[in-house]
Image 1 (tube, rainbow, N blue to C red):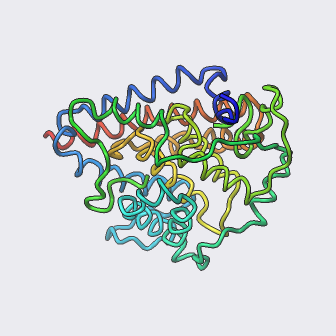
Image 2 (cartoon, one colour):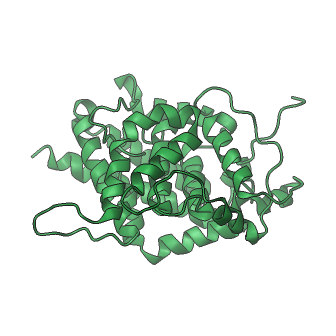
Length: 321
């Protein structure tokens, strides 16, 4: 149809191994949601999953987790827990004004780090553009609050159980791309291979493009969108501190909102933590914006949703004993 911009993230789905990785991630999370315990008592599972996610996310940024008395004193861990507790309250904001949600996540995550003003550190995000990436021109305008693929994922997970939306009960129900080679951030280099003319993008523009994608500007499968949100925020480092915690918290929000994990039961952060150096290497590949780097990052993220579903199942299994 004339005048309709192409989906800027659609080419990512065709990258090597991505379609299979997406299928595995979806199937793993759907199975987790169908666990007998999670059919009726999912809120308690989600609360535990959010706590484990916060701990793993904080550990990825070097937080000290263990204390004999169990008191949380590490500022990174405290911030990650606060961000997790705000998920239910921020879900509506994320769906309509994601940049506001990001600012709030940063305030919560960085409150004990001396840089909790919530203002984007544009110098850092602009510097990330030194990779030479180009933007996909004309991302689709945002209409509504969820993507087409997100609705499909939500329907698959909820099945006959009715709505699978996170109500925000207990506040901790989980904190919760690019173009054949292009996307919002380091993802745009492949746009050229698809014939889309590019131009340099600054950090502020890239955040705005990311917001458009989150609010309905793409119809790619939810695991791909979630991976782009995660990788883009790691690449841009829009704030002066706590960027890793914010990126992973935003990825959980994206997973809930898009329907990949609408109840916040999986814990992919544990998978990222166990992956160690592979997580950081994959993130660097995303930032570089090469086809191989983008594919590796998306496959990595999908694999951690499979691992996160296993972690979520261990939570559910423990509640049956």
